[in-house]
Amino acid sequence: MLETIAIILVILWLLGFVSSYTMGGFIHILLVIAVIVIVIRVIQGRRL
Image (tube, rainbow, N blue to C red; front, side, top):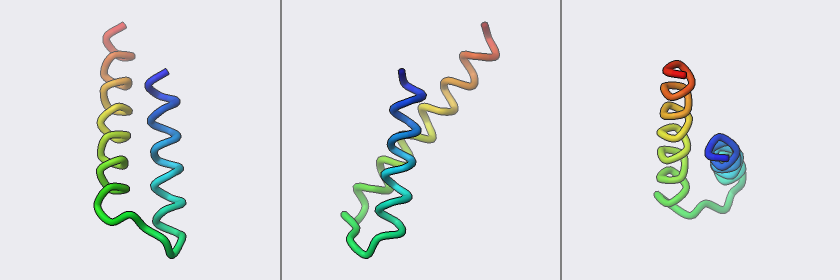
């Protein structure tokens, strides 16, 4: 579930980065959140 959300956030960030319309720092905050979620999922996956 969290991994899916992280992938969606990364895709939205890429779309915002490519398009001429950007929401300023908000889209970069979404990217940071997505990266953090992915790292947490990787760490939890290795523990199991």
